Structure formats: C-alpha cells, structure tokens
Image 1 (cartoon, helix red, strand yellow):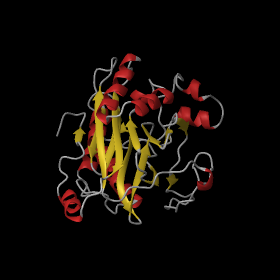
Image 2 (cartoon, one colour):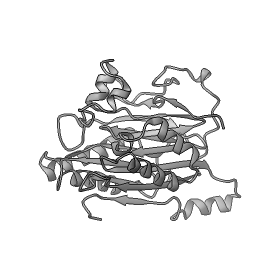
Image 3 (cartoon, rainbow, N blue to C red):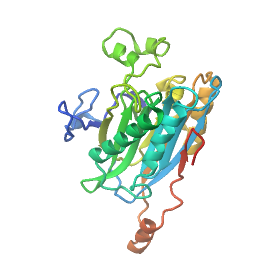
Length: 317
C-alpha cells in the first residue's frame, strides 16, 4: 500500500446555510476536488458488511477523574468529553452516551436512520444534561452511525465541540469533523498556525457543547462506506498530545483495531497525557461471499460481532 497521505475532511456536509440537509456535491469538502480527480476508490461493500472495533479510555497522568464517556454498540459509535469538573463533566458525558445507548437502533445493522433522526437524539441529550446539571456541566460529542442510504451502507458522522473523528481509507488519512473551538477559529482566520494552535493557552476553550452555553448545534456529514475504511473517534486527550502524522502512523501500521486503540492511548501517555484519553477504532470490510442460507444466518445472529462497549464516566450502568 502506498504511504498514507494527510488530508482534510472529505465528507458531504448535510447542513446547508438554511440548516436543511443537502445532497452530495461530489466534491471534497476541504479541497473542492471533484470525483474525477480523486484516487480510484474500492467498491463500497454491501449492507452485509463486517465491523471490527477496538476501544479504551484512560484518565491520563494529570487528572484526578475521568470525565470521558463512550459508546461502541453497532450501529452507534461515539466519544463524549465532559466539562465542568467533579460531579459535573462526568455526569454530562454519561447522560450523553446513555441517551445514544437507549436509542431503538442499537443492535440493528445499517438502519434507515437520517440526520434529522440523529439531530433529535442529540437534542434530547442536550436537554437532559441541562435539566439534570442545571447548566453547570457540558460535554463535547463526536461519532458516527452506520446507516442505510439509497440501498448502500453510509457513515453518518456528527460532531459538537473539539473531540474528533478521523478516517483512513484508500491510503488517505484526514479529519472528518471540524473543531468547534476558539483556536480553530483563529486558525481559520489565519491569525495562528496549526502548530501554534497545539500549545495555545486557550486551546481547550470550545465554542459549542451539549448541556451548557448558547450553541449546542451539531454538524453532520454523510459519506458512503468504502471497503477497508478505518475510523478513529477520540477525545482531545489524544489529539492534543499526538500529531495527526503520529496518529496516522499508528492507524496505518497496527492492523488489529483493539491493538491500535491500545497503542494510541499508550502514545498519549508517553507524551504526558495531560487530559483524559478516549479512543474508538472502527474497521469496515465486506462480508465474505456465502450462500444465501448462511448469509441469512449471519444477519439473524451477529451478537458477538463486533465487540461492544459503553463506558459512563459517572460509574453508572
């Protein structure tokens, strides 16, 4: 395989200026590159694709508590990074993942689930956090739902705050989500560089969050699944310690998703782990060809594949 290349977000933005879902433009969201000039993509797998998942979380080396929560339960994968300190941030992130986990789509495969459906679920989480924490706690949220769109599997990405979602596919690596943070706004306006943003004193200040503040609006992107896709969802405890190049190196060289997850967390710990670190790695491959009966059996009983987990930072189930 050729050396993976760093690349910007390349999903279809589902929110137009009017706030309504939009159709695919066939262009790269970061560069404007048309489909005709992109590297050739492998065919998208059918709805009977297989996922392999790895995940983990660590409170890091300087924090007393872990305020991160995560859910990895097909078809929903998400990381929430709580804010607000003891008995606040962990409550917000936990409410967030539990709300996602209570969705009726958990345990289904590629449901016909839309950005509008997901927006309602995220709004419910926001309202529950505000009600239970009285505006004193908040959380970021980044993730993906594996959905059916036009008879094919698609990734429905979502993001609020500065936790991140990355994608490695066909030798191209890049961030799908866009940080909602003060330093990202400074980078976007050319006032600081990406490198300066990594050490800026206000690098942890987010401009959107669930449960607190005036802006809890999520961004959504939709893109077809391609065979061999590898996704990374993480809190800023990883992206704040490891460069995109370092993340890409681990994702492209460590084959097993759980081992990749473990190595990413270990790398953050070696770099000082000043914050909580949470990682989910999701791999997608086309299911092997089987006869119709065995394929039907796979659809009916997939309880053990992929691995599943939910971690609520407040210690509840």
